[in-house]
Length: 183
Image (cartoon, rainbow, N blue to C red; front, side, top):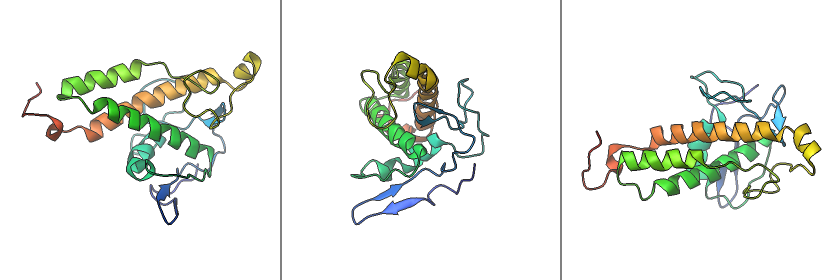
């Protein structure tokens, strides 16, 4: 898979800079419901291949590009990896909203763990946030053929990795209110 450094792939318009995923070479990448099962830096077993710890994965890209991409009005999708980047941008936004009212590290940890335990809908299921983003199966047979259960497992793993990475990167002692100390 050929990839450039983070930030090399961007689109500009007069309004917003949109960053695209560097995972554009899809040769050898499995897909489930049209979603690429990209390598993840994870200890969580799942259908996505494991990436080296010193490389950038799709979760790192989503966290890095979040501030720029969260404001886009239009997003020219250049690869199926961009679709996953859109999904992760929404998920990071949800995670940050859950952390808004947390006053301590313990409260934040609990909120994030609870978010991680929530069901992950896949295309075709009620609650999937982007009905047209990935191909939804039209029948149970098609769901099996498109391997939608692998997508559910992969999105669950991505969600757990993303939450962990986001929490580790973005939480610091300055977020604690009234000098509450953690143990």
